[in-house]
Image (tube, rainbow, N blue to C red; front, side, top):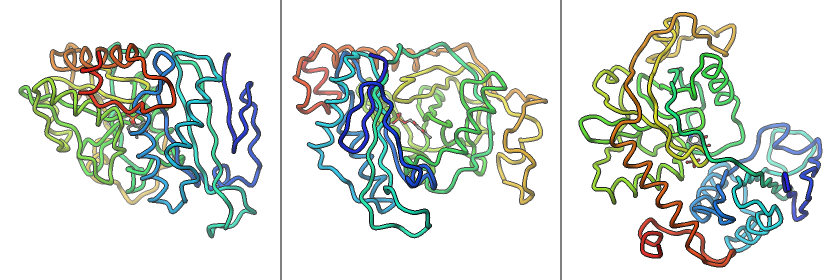
Length: 325
Ligand SMILES: Cc1ncc(COP(=O)(O)O)c(C=O)c1O
């Protein structure tokens, strides 16, 4: 089955559920979302995603329309209907449907979901293009307002990079849809989970895996000027898992904006890379990246083979997964 859709209590086998034109997500981007990976028909880290959804909803003042148990039921039912063992769930909650006006309406939130099949991620090494982080100052909210992320990803893609490395005041924060990790002299660095990054569920899982492997992690942002001392770089996300990076570059005209955004409005935000400045390159993947990739794959394999019926507690800690294997 290609896709399952869900809108406010109704599942559609063909995914053709229609959203009303006065939907606030459509008109204002007034909502939040989650993307959850399904392995062997089971939702990976479901409760962690639902907790982050709650955090995003609270941040923007939308009342959570469902209890944890109701969410588990809705999402598991979507996965069951899709009959896809390898899938990705997209879950969105918006402030609802109301005649367009900025003030919050007194309507109920809208819930929509799709379940789509996915292939195993591409874990081949790729390049990153440094771009100024022009998002709002609340990147910890997983809002559906993704315009800056979309533009950055497209600019990076046009320059043959796999993602944009977003740099705010000189500090390397995260990717347009990924968290970033740097290895220096055996120590791992990743930006702290403050307002400037989305605290990835994969990030949190990899932090646990790293500690299990006896690796030291500093939750500290590094400046792009420190790149010359870096031995390995990798990125993480729900759909990309752990992907090594082999090269980081920026456009010469963008170098100043990485430390300080100029007041002048650019004519286009789709920054080109006409004069690439090479900032870093290594043969990827390095030993720490490989170790974590293996640990991640093993954790997923353990999760796949741990036979707990769907609808029960899917939120296994690293320890749980290993002990059940
Ligand atoms: C900006 C940003 N950072 C990081 C991530 C990775 O988060 P997760 O590991 O929960 O997929 C995402 C995922 O969409 C993202 O959009």
